[in-house]
Length: 294
Ligand SMILES: Cc1cc2nc3c(=O)[nH]c(=O)nc-3n(C[C@H](O)[C@H](O)[C@H](O)COP(=O)(O)O)c2cc1C
Image (cartoon, rainbow, N blue to C red; front, top):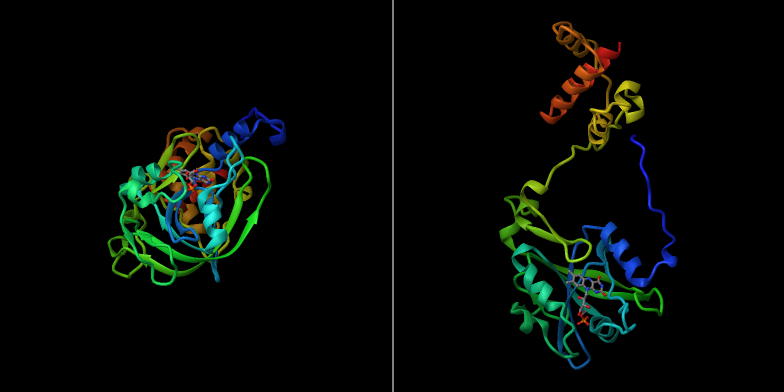
């Protein structure tokens, strides 16, 4: 690994604004819970929260966090609503509704319905009282099991523990097996500052992960490969994920390939291994590395 320099910080030595900035720019991208709730009078509220994730599938539990405002320590309508009426719909946000979602985060007065302000469509839920967003690719009707306060100062989160009791999935995002097709979801996520990211098209990639077999590990690779300036961390990770060492016939083929080269050295081998990995020839690349090292 190349030598690196670090800026090392004590989080409580920073201002709330600085701390917020570092935390949110580093812990990203974050999915967005577009939460619909109602108050005691039954008035509807819709607001986005990127302090959000799924934490359990049995029981199905999601958590999001409406924080105390860093500027004036006030609490949010969504927070009051889930304490008064412990039900919420977590609507998933994708690219076609990202601007309307952003608009809905405006601090409108209590009782203002952000479905109306953002021009999104309310549909009644099956089990819970808050309506869901018709345009969302997936909506989760939830009962709120608990609300856990993390502090009483500006910036303190309030964990809303949500148990999913119904799921609604737009059939347009399903494949033939009735499973969600990640490419069709066209999801967006929140980064630091005003940045968002799209999770679709060329930004998506797959990493083959053997479910049962264990990878040999980067530590099992020859030292010249681990110290290479050509092979990247991703190259090493991909090679270390292979579960078996190359057999004799793979090594023989690789040796023959090397013997056809006029001059064989670390640079040539690493460049070839890097190219093979780019082409998806993972086992062949590992064989070349070990054939050269032999
Ligand atoms: C994409 C996005 C993500 C947000 N995430 C959070 C969050 O995780 N926690 C939070 O307190 N506010 C978050 N906000 C700000 C709230 O949406 C905003 O304060 C909103 O006015 C709260 O509405 P409410 O008072 O009706 O609940 C986010 C805003 C946007 C646009």
